[in-house]
Image 1 (cartoon, rainbow, N blue to C red):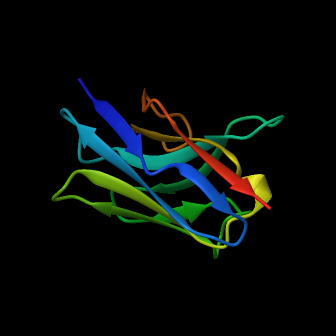
Image 2 (image 1 turned 60 degrees about the vertical axis):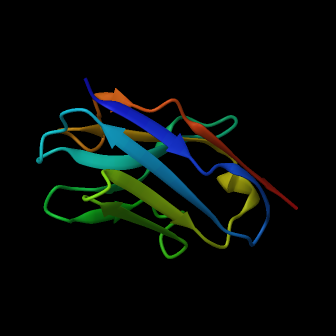
Image 3 (image 1 turned 135 degrees about the vertical axis):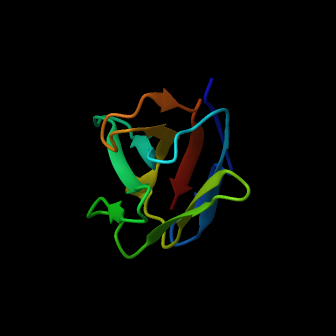
Length: 117
């Protein structure tokens, strides 16, 4: 049973930074993609960033250059470093994994990020 637990959300002033963590447990196949999604107010859930098993990384255009996804395999932890945060980054961020990056099978419970002016 795969379990994902996010942490690191909170409130931050625009322009600030936050780092999200996702602790993974269970039998996660090596070929699984891991990524971050977010649900922002009034918008559909969107994929923020993912990292494939071969190390390929992809970002949604609105965060490219500001967010960095990384993975520590020894700790089974996925990270999302978020810099230069904007008001529109406010939302609930979910860690997810599965064989397909855009359609993951397993989800965390989410961690809320609030960016204020």
